[in-house]
Image (cartoon, rainbow, N blue to C red; front, side):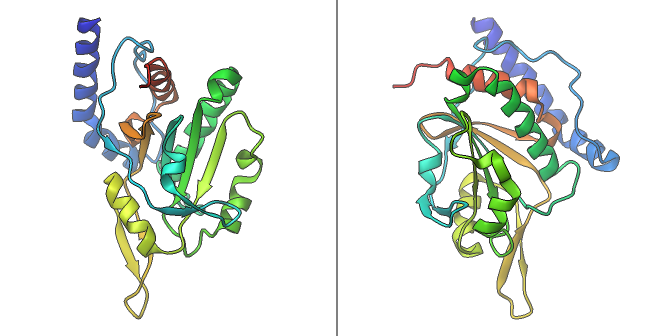
Length: 227
């Protein structure tokens, strides 16, 4: 078990070292990553605790305000930041397609799906209002789904920025003519895997966001004993 864990750590380190090159290649090609390796079996490795997921106040698709921690604990959570209008093939659409693929696989085992949640949170509360997110999500956000997929926003960029900073998500701020912040602009896709205790256990970038890998990481966390 120890050797397998060490091997997994070395493999992830090697892939991380290639991530910058991979992202550059993907950006030039404008295409999603292709998996060219077999993902390690669930439970054959351990995902280390990276940091605690931050808190803040968010709005759901009905406009109700909730603490972000409501969506960070009790289940394994997969979170990404999005724009509803993003068309970059290696940006938000890639995250959406990966989430959709994982959703289909997890729903094949409803008992497993009920222990997982997805969160898509907007970078742009000015445009991505609760009603805009409700239209964007459609039936994916239905409360009766075995796997809940939450689409969240905030009241303002000012309320969003501490959440972004807490996750370590790279952004810049777009200002209006009066110098007021209007939205956060991001070029680097990150997806965060959070355990049931609210700890970030993995951060995926474009070069490593592959359904087989993410699914096995989710299963690995679900196999852990939660205190």
